[in-house]
Amino acid sequence: MSHPPLLQVEEVSVRRGARDVVQQVSLSVSTGERVALVGPNAAGKSTLLAAIAGLLPAARGEIRLDGRSLRTFASREVARTVALVVALQEGAPRLSVRESAELGRYPHTGAFQDLTREDHGAVSQAIRETGLQDL
View 1 (cartoon, rainbow, N blue to C red):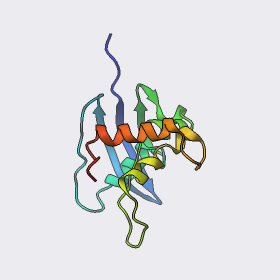
View 2 (cartoon, rainbow, N blue to C red):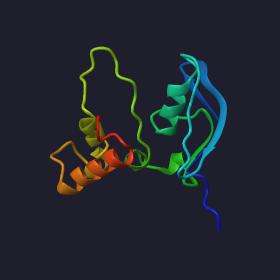
View 3 (tube, rainbow, N blue to C red):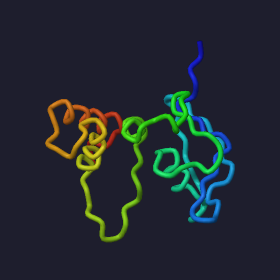
């Protein structure tokens, strides 16, 4: 029995105001696969990622996570499945790698609070698995 792709984007368009910023994009990503989203400035890369993260609605098309429509997820469920790190704006506070990774625990804890031993372990494991421990 084959599993559905981890992420499936089918003919997705995303609007910003009256303008289609992303038009009819389709892609499929399987577990363990790495994908680069490349294009010039203002091509819609960040907008597409925001739609995949559930932060912007798709005007048309369908986004599925593990075979399930993104529209059926609660926002917290999406946050537990999809992580989105945006480029820092000039003047934004600089976070360490550990502090950035710790922000990813929010959907699991439910509040910005002191992290538990389990949270610290998950953060350390994520840093090791991504090879960022020297940063």
